[in-house]
Image (tube, rainbow, N blue to C red; front, side):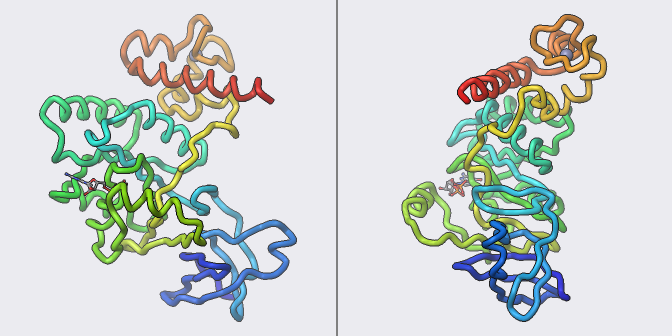
Length: 288
Ligand code: GDP
Ligand code: ZN
């Protein structure tokens, strides 16, 4: 039975790519009884116009509905809108929790003055030290496009970030055939319409990129406070050196993470954001 990857869903039809060809299929009737829906990104068995089986997923995202994502390109502009480290850390935790590799893209660098550029360089150094890939991009002069193209090759990626940071412009600059709508106004109009959303994976090199930005909901409902530090790789790496097993890196004595913060090996803002998310998760639990 042929196996393929769903690269588009539209009004109950799934376009499956197999051996360079596209096959338009419907879901099998009993998917509905089993309450499973094929998702774009799924690897499936199909035959004679029907999706017959969905292979186990590596991960899945609700909005937009996508499966088997390898990486998330987190686009944050230096200005317009201004860079928000708290929001970047929120996205990073979300991706870490979902087992999606984050790539950080500081965009619109052509609009940044020297002071802002220096500030962004400092943030880039902090995040690179953690182990994240950090790129500076500008849709205007196509800076670092080769690097970005290389990172996207062979992977299934989703772009994420606030509206207006330049996600669509970046994608269009990577491949003008994408013809994605740019500008915050068109995005706002699109959201108001209650038409059936088409979800697509666009081919890029030997990989794919979702045509809709991901992670519109960034809550931590599925996370437990005790697991949060695993979503901060620099804290995860030190946890074994804390005196207490299961150290939350908040109030405990002889905490290797807090020592690293005191030594400035871990930036204070990372620990501060950790603390905020920790309290947020605890607050969620109390409400139930
Ligand atoms: P999205 O909402 O993240 O998809 O952002 P868009 O791609 O729609 O871009 C928002 C606005 O910023 C548009 O007016 C773009 O023309 C502009 N823009 C995007 N990237 C850049 C860039 O690298 N440099 C400059 N100067 N403007 C950009
Ligand atoms: Zn600790």
